[in-house]
Each structure stands twice: as structure tokens, then as C-alpha cells.
Image (cartoon, rainbow, N blue to C red; front, side, top):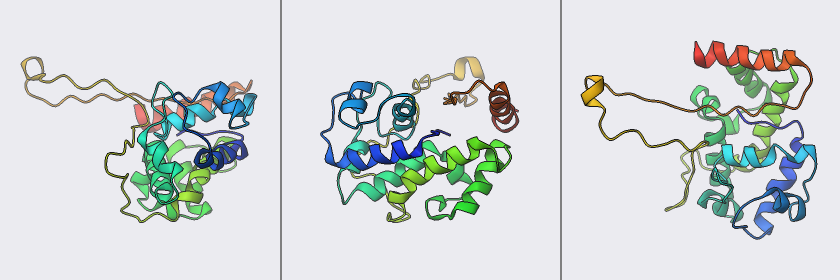
Length: 203
């Protein structure tokens, strides 16, 4: 799940997206000059926008980004962004965008295996809430506008057309996991993250 230790910076960027021009590519220069987000606190912003589908993997704004810029489309776009970036949260609670903070914390703890007081739990929560503020107004069955691109969190190559000759006709699936690591010198933080990945995804 994507997160930042500076959710206030993320909130300010989301607030400015509707009033700023849509760039050809959302670069760090655009982030700093137009959005006013610079320094280490701004570093996770572009990965988060990619993970939530507002940007594609080359940094180009998607149709979901355009939908978020429009007043009428913003709630549905924010909801789809949450579903893209926090899919496991929605698998456990399909109405997570309406959930109160204690319920969200419980879900995050269940997914990560981290203690409630762990800083990363709070960072994930506040990153989720930055989008939730907009998504609460969306209909629960909201979909991206026709022709919209609710880009998946991560681009993956298409599956082979037919693997039946080598796999006995069995369906084979593969997926990629992108982990945004925090900036820290405490190795225990990384150990906790990878223990959680092993227990919940790789086990």
C-alpha cells in the first residue's frame, strides 16, 4: 500500500490538481514549480499518484487524472484511485471509503501485521484519508467516466495468448508488487515490512 510520512504535502498536491494545467508528464520539476512540493517530503508523491492510477508508469496523467480535475467527476475519481492503490483494503471492506478511522486502522493492521502504534500504520492511514476526503461523496457503485482510464496501480505485460501447449491448459497468472519504502536508518522498519509481505503475500 502506498504511503507518505508527510500527508499534508499530498493533500496540498491533490487540492492543486483541479486548478493547475495538466502536464504532458508529471515530473519532479512540475511537482516543485507548479505544485509547490519540494524536498524529501515531496519524493513519495509521484509514486503514490502512479500507484493510485492518476499517473501512468511513465508519469503521464491518465483519464482518471482528468476526471479528478473536474468538480463533477472528482468524488468518483478519488474512489477509483483508492481502489487502485488500496485494493486489499477494499477486498476486506468494500465500503472502506466511508469507514471511520478506527475501522481503517484495524484493516491496515490486519493486512500489514504491524502493531497499531507503528508509524507506518499511521502513514498508510493518513495517505488513504487524503483521497477519502474526496471519495466520501461518491456513489458506492461509482465508475470512471466512459472512456476513462482507471489505470492499474502498476503496469504489467499482457499474459501470453495461449500457454496450453506447455501448461496442460491450466490458467497461469502472474502479478507484480511495488513497495514504496520509507526513508529511515532503522533497519527494524524494513524488517517489519518484509516480514509482513512474507506472511501476507508470499506465504
